Length: 510
Image (cartoon, rainbow, N blue to C red):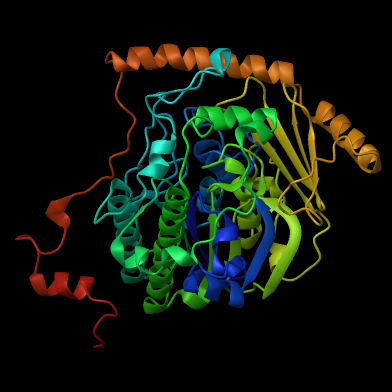
């Protein structure tokens, strides 16, 4: 007899470092809904993104593959339509699949296995944001982060991000109600939904009701601020790229940005609450595994850095909380990453590796979520985007984190004794054996020269294509969700009593 497949709901934030949530121990940030899930579920304390940038991270998340395997290098890399995703596999296993919100798909395939996509995306789907590794030290002024974003932090009644996330939340809730209304006609197929919000991603601007949850005197200052002169070479290039090395911030501006970020974390948390409430109202909560995560973190002034684009903890680590049927309560200390989500979903859905159309790089986290011992304690990261002329790699294994770029000196940190990554142990005689082993592993895992040539080749082709597309070659790829108003609500060809009965949930009993 086939085991009943649970529903799956992923609630995804953008640029949310776990450090800034109540569930992970922050004493000020209010995240009651995430906290509640963590209290009745499993919290992963060393979860990482596989690339600290939006699109590459999301493509790794959906494919279960590292970005070097699928050429998902930067925010303008095409997510190839031939790459299978967890949405494809879950659909093949009988799930009704839905995406509401951001996934930053680049290319003509704007669904990648999702049966329903109910909102547009918020960022460009073309090649506009292609970096140039042959001019890696030149700032991309048209669209890239700078310190003006921090300086303009504060309060507003509306922003494009608030508009977007309100739409994403509304569309997701309506879809869940429609699923409940139509469950009998859907042959009781389980659902798998990703509701993906853009908050607390910069700009750091919050509505008053969230801003007023906090006061300036509650906001902690970055624990480990560094000047440009104190930075390692890669971090110095990142500082230059975001203008943090040339544009000074006042203490008041730093506090204001962090307060707005905290406010927007609470705003995102409210969306978790609304979706969980909808599961309760539709009778699906007890049969739904809820996962909360993010695509990457935010430095938020730590080390003098902002945003992401590096492998330090505030940028590379993510929240990962699972709760629902079969999930134990507790915390997992083993390192893991977003590429582990696809095999986890495969196991949840009752599938196996025979379904896989391509090799994957992740492992299932379901045993760990069920309180079993996980023999693997590892996360792998790759960064192939702005402010570097060579790939940057991360290996987190046990308490050690190794960061390597052919262009820069290596970095090694022991997070058990140095959680703020203050002391680079790569040249420490006591860690010589570990540093040597990591360096050898990097050379065996990756061919940086070949990867660099491939990246530059794709950059050149994408830039040429973008010029043609700007001139009018072909259709734009930005997603327009289908909508037929003639079939919505009450229309002349309908019996309004039938329409009213169809929309009402729960239905009136005979």
